[in-house]
Image (cartoon, rainbow, N blue to C red; front, side, top):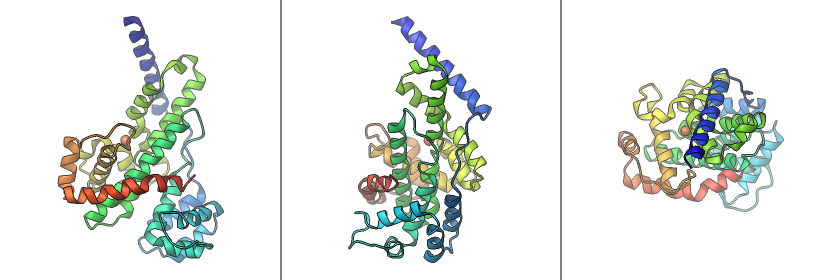
Length: 290
Ligand SMILES: [Fe+2]
């Protein structure tokens, strides 16, 4: 028994070293954000963007237009069937449309299909749930919702990239195939913030988003300009962990989460109001991109 534990640890150490080397040497294919996604992202980030401007960009991408139509006809936006893009956009509204565009820009573009498809799906659901929770926190505080939604949606972007890198390492090295899934998931948690930060820099994302991706696990000690966003994301993650949506049974708030909520001015009554829509909408919203 003692030998098996030793071998297991050594395998994990070797895999950790291989992964760390690949990240340090940036030996991973940087996922590409599609051109239209970048364009819509740019338009959506403009606070003055109108429905008409976003519509003009949407019209260039049939897949995205189809997804907007699907969203408008889903249970999220109740009403009679909407047959046209213009009607769909009107029903969803500017703010909801921007959020759909963000989801489209970042989902599915970051990882190829591989043995951990089921994990990718869970990561995506978590990201969407976190984005909804951040949206709820921002609304409760009377703040703009767009940056919190986008920041929470992308903050764990390093996870799908890390697990894809690990799937590649396992393909190349027979020994690594002996590592079980919990080991692989642990390694993802270990490197995802650093890896995500590197990719975010290559994508030239705005600094607040790059920081959110790279430093979200140090939210409480982060004192940069994006502290408010960072705390919002930490609070959102604590909320989805509380709901049992973070791949583990429901968890109590940690001391850090309580401190984050206190600094954000979010109290118990707010939290109850935030949790309900996250629980109700996360799966629906995540499935819109399928
Ligand atoms: Fe994370």
